[in-house]
Image (cartoon, rainbow, N blue to C red; front, side, top):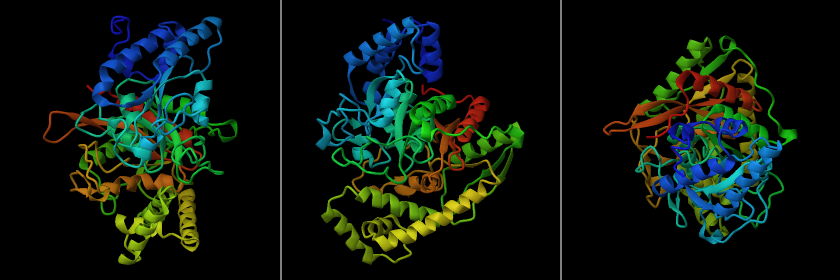
Length: 488
């Protein structure tokens, strides 16, 4: 089949999942035809970007045929016949789930992760798994099993991480949307790098049961702190669609605040002293602010009443401590022994890692008290403001950098080379206080010195449980700026 001649042109692959679903429901094309077109595109595009880690062609194609039978019977489900991808950190029944780890190279789960099961029950076709760094532990996407994933905007650049394969697949039109996860910006940073919409929901909104890490041999009684599941997509409406279908009834997100644009009060937050960003990133935030002002909203520079540095310190300590949960005892002891080399007020990444490795119950209790004060400050702030507009990350997509010591890597920005883990700074605010945050693409900006453009976006943070307001605000930006632009 020639997919272009059959109507599956570039505009189709840049369209939203909702648009694909409307085409299926109207009979513009069959699920089998859509599947074949997407598969043809995968064969043409994936060898260059290497977004996919595993797939089962025969099973997926048969699911597409069954979807057509469901449409014919008038029994189509909400996502019937929609080809999607799943980040390779979520278990998928009968389909390899390695999470980039050679030790899991033959791990084929017997059941789906909870969120995957909901998508499958809604009629989605799990087309493939998307690549991740080993055990999701990097801001770029590469591992010994499946290799390096490249950014479809420029193959020399990273698509971000840990949901880099997810972002690359969706941006390249290899999938309608992807189910991803976020602990330290793993949805939001790839959304920025690839020009997508990404939702980090309120913590606990979408179940993480069946997610790796922790390893499959470990089953937690409670969901891990900070981490969430959420979608990467080509439109704001798709974020809302996935949110509706993956959250359980008891965890359903309330309706958006429903304010008219001229009733909105938004806070603009930039911090060039503690969390500098590239000038093109800043330009994207300011453009988003201007979009809201033009719509009638009040946008003022404001921030909650706490220290960004304090929030970041608490978050990074907790993040590293979560990472150490699966680390061999001897490795943790080695890092903990380094703590005596650092002053107690040292918030360098080496120092924070050492302190996290040494964390005891008393230290954790003090962090919890400090975190509660920040949560309270956010709650008070959102009595007066509907959302915060801030950077998703300090930089645009950057060249692949696999230097062995991640702490030695640097982010190229107009503010100078920044520490690699500064990618956690703007991610920390929503994650620490379990708030919803949406990243929306705003513009394309010329990369200095090269004949290319790159996407830049804005992070929209809302009050706890106000997920749908964040999605709605992203939709307003999408309408004003044109939303997703496909890489050329």
